[in-house]
Image (tube, rainbow, N blue to C red; front, side, top):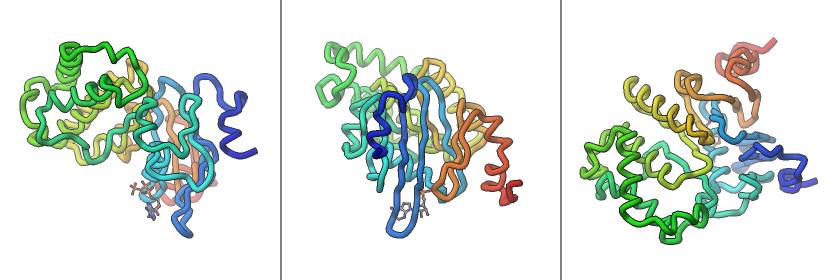
Length: 266
Ligand SMILES: Nc1ncnc2c1ncn2[C@@H]1O[C@H](COP(=O)(O)OP(=O)(O)OP(=O)(O)O)[C@@H](O)[C@H]1O
């Protein structure tokens, strides 16, 4: 059976698995960046993907969002095989990604940055959440302002987004994702380069997003962030998934200690 067929077989994917990375391999020439990755993300959970530098985390994220085709295997989201789809089609299905380098419109106001994705969805650029087609500008503005209040950016709403601090830009990008009401939020090192204070603010924000039942996949180096948020942790090392499970189980796994500390597993 092919990986793709296996991924969509009804008995292979339990009902509450929203994302299934099924037997994915990714080679760059002779380099095996990902080998035999099988990862399942349950709806409503926060699933962290961790691993030492060069383990394959960014490659995995890029395969999920369609920026890189897998060499073999498939990614299935909510019953849809994503493999072969363009990144914007994957976004339309309800997957939003917050990038390491915030992708915002620097010359637009903070408020307009948050409103822009909602207009795009309302005006037909997005297929899902069609109820948004009836939203008028006042409703979109009210929702955007609400998000900015929650994210501590309301006072800056008329400022150019380019003038925000690094931490505020990342929170703005998060608000731009949330106004699209994604079903899955992918976070690529959301606190990279942040001060401890900014990191803690972002953790609290993500906890609040998580408490609404959002499914989150997070790639993160900072273990304080990982253990503050994750319900499940999957560990990549040299392109292979070496452990996956609840945080304490993963923390105690000798293979994980070996991957991080170079201490041989018993
Ligand atoms: N486009 C590419 N072409 C060739 N090799 C690549 C490419 N992208 C990544 N690699 C290689 O694949 C391996 C996995 O890289 P990847 O960036 O996915 O790791 P990572 O876990 O995200 O690392 P880091 O934590 O340092 O960002 C590395 O050996 C990297 O050099």
